[in-house]
Image (tube, rainbow, N blue to C red; front, side, top):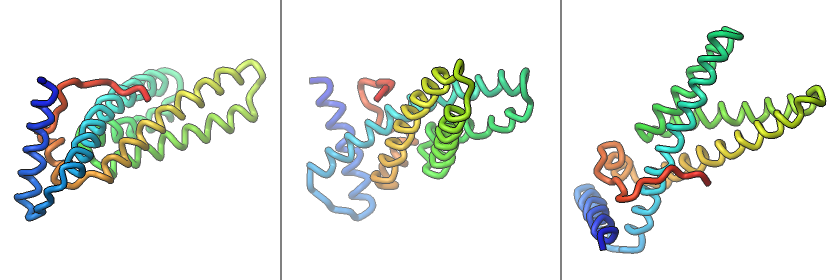
Amino acid sequence: MAGQHYLDVAEYHINKVNNDNNNNNNDNNNTEMEIEVAYRAWNYHRTITFLASIDLVVLLLYGGFINPIFGLFVLFPIFGIYGAKTFRKGCTIVYLLYVTFQLAFYVWLGIVAVSGFFIFYLISFFIHLWIAKIVCTFYLDLNSLSPATISSLRDGVLIPQVMNVVVW
């Protein structure tokens, strides 16, 4: 019963936002789909923030101690963290492009790698493929949400009762 209460509260906020914008759409299925996508985006934003934070720490350690040139790549996880926390499409696409570049880099390394490191590059490729899937799904969810719903997510109005870190 408590879960239904939160669904009703979220539906109320989305209907209120739609009525304020003169979008008098009484289709409950559309509203429920928007709520589900908003909740999924909320959960994905937590996951991306976590993964980009790990990426940031690894780049700082690697860039600070081993190769300072890699310190420049620190900006990309910062874009990912900021884009996920504020539900910004532009920052999210920059982080998605960075993860895609990493995928291509691991493919290249896997092709030219010394045989002892091939397994490492293969594992890294699949981890980054998983991260790219999560970031891409988050970006597509943001594109399907209305600006008013994204604003409600930023303001913390549409927070699901159960918050999950999404792994797939």
